[in-house]
Length: 250
Image (cartoon, rainbow, N blue to C red; front, side):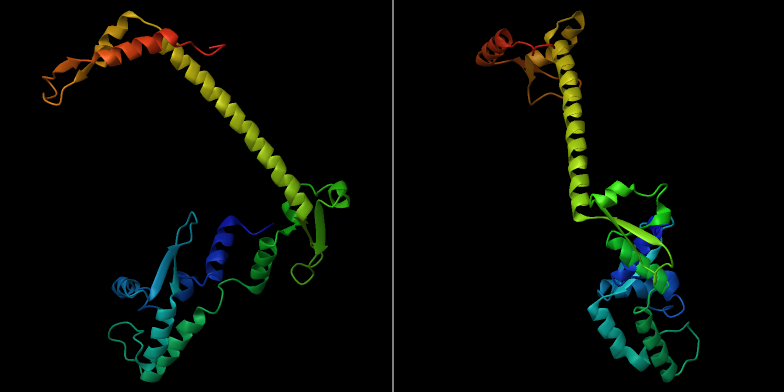
C-alpha cells in the first residue's frame, strides 16, 4: 500500500526539520521534556513547536538557527540531566552533540523515506489499486509505469503523465462547475419561495408593524417609542411595490 496519511504527515514534518518528542526523549530531557525550560526556549525563539495533525496528536520540535547556535555554544556547560545527577563536562558535551545529531536523523528507515519521496513525485505502488489502470490509459499516454527495484523488488509503480494530469484537472473543474450551477439553481428556487412569501399578505403580518415605523434612540426595551416613516420613504416604498414583479416560474 501507499504510505498512510498519518505517516505521511510525520515524514513531512521531519523533512522540515522537526523531530518528535519520542525521537528526542533519550537526548533532550532538559530542553524539550521539561515544561519550564521548553517555555523559556520557545520564548527566546530557540525552539519551534508543532503538532503532527494526526488523530493521536503529538508534539514535534524544531531548532531555529539561533537555537542550534546556542546549543553549539553551550558544549560542556550544556544542562542535560536530571536534578541531582552528577555528570562530567565531557559527558555534557557528548550529550549536547548527541542531541544535535539527533536532528540530522529521521525516525523512519531509509526505505520508508524513499517511498515517501517517490509518492511526492506522484508515483503510487501497484498494490494500492483495487484494479490496475487499464492498458489503454498507458497506451494513450495518460498513465506511465515503472519498477523501482531498489525501493521494492518487483513492485510496479504508476503515476499520471502531464497529459493525464491536465485531463483529470479539466474533468474536476467541469464537475465543480456543474455542482456550482446546481447550487445556484437551488438558491434561486429558495429565493423565489422567499419572495413569494414576502409578496403575500396575511393576518399574521400585523405583528410586524414595527417595520412600518422607526424606533427612536430613546426608550428602553420594555418602553420603546416609535416615529412614523418619512413621507418620501413611504412614497418610494409604494412605488417599488407597484413596479415589482416576481421572476418568471416563481
